[in-house]
Amino acid sequence: PPFSHAHPAIRESGASRGRGDVYKRQGLLPEAVFGHGSAVRAFPTPANGFDLRAPGSGESILGAPIDVVFPIVHGRSGEDGELQGLLELSRVAYVGCGVLSSALCMDKVASKRILRDAGIPVLPWLDATRHEVRDQCAALLDRVAATFSFPVFIKPANTGSSVGIRRATNRDELRQALEEAAGYDLHVLVEPALDAREVECAVPVSYTHLTL
Image (cartoon, rainbow, N blue to C red; front, side):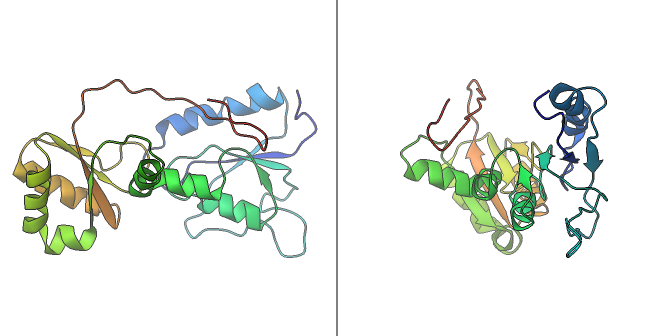
């Protein structure tokens, strides 16, 4: 295998509650990429965070050098750029998206604005702060009702997978969904329901070309 002499590390799932598929994939990567018998080390994130390298030791928190990290992660502290930033500050190589793209893609409102400003069609939305949800809820409900027809979908701006996402078919369900979403993040967004086919694709990028 191409990485048979490397010292890889697998960073386990992030702080999000949507972790199920991540744990399934973690068991597949060592064999698929590094082959049988590879010294791949998996490490979770401690509740209070960690320093990846001990100062001056040249070794990682795993007690051995790390050549490359595979961030098989989901949700906050993993997909949102935090881990990627830590790895870059620690001068440790990693695969996948960098800090900026990770942060933008995790923030649904920011990613919509970037796509819209680049001329890419996006589904209309309204966004609001937790303060608006909790202290100005009636006005927010009126604004949503004046903009969209039910049903609508309510989402925290920054969570992984479907965490905190609800469908509302009336004003009371909308209020409950907004309150729940605001419990997960400081910002929430509301989108109209759309009957469409979802297509996912990878976009490999190098310094010389982009492939869709």
